[in-house]
Image (cartoon, rainbow, N blue to C red; front, side, top):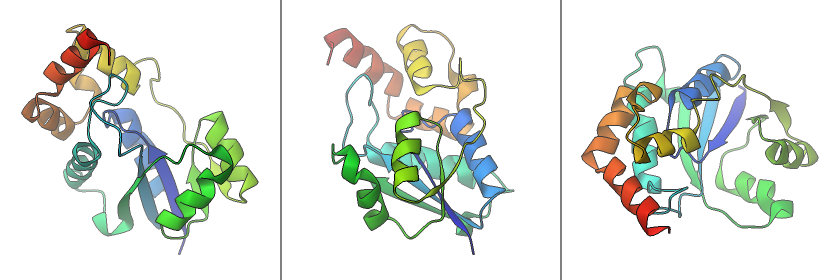
Length: 173
């Protein structure tokens, strides 16, 4: 049985993340979704809590009838702020895996040096499907809901996430 790892901050979980998960599930039997920096929240770059992000992911994937939830494990992965030890930290927190689905250069380097095989998922509409872009659209009152799943949109609405983003941005946290 093959197992892969896909880590993101998911601030918020968006359709680009969903596309990466779909890509990964076509290549492995099981997928670990690591929620990076779950301890960070109520910051302009990290406005949502680890629990809110977990709910965004879980409810979005639950809504997809084509995804077998038994193939997915969602695990929070707190920061340690030591690049040389990060992959070892990750490997302690999650079940063993053969593949890491990553695009950013530092993660590729760190996982490669730790002996993990890298698979680069294609990035979908990166100019729009970016947490940074979506958060700024929230702050600037530009429609962002088409960039996230319906379930993520509902969670953000229910927690008053747009209002939170605007307050965080205005106080310059």
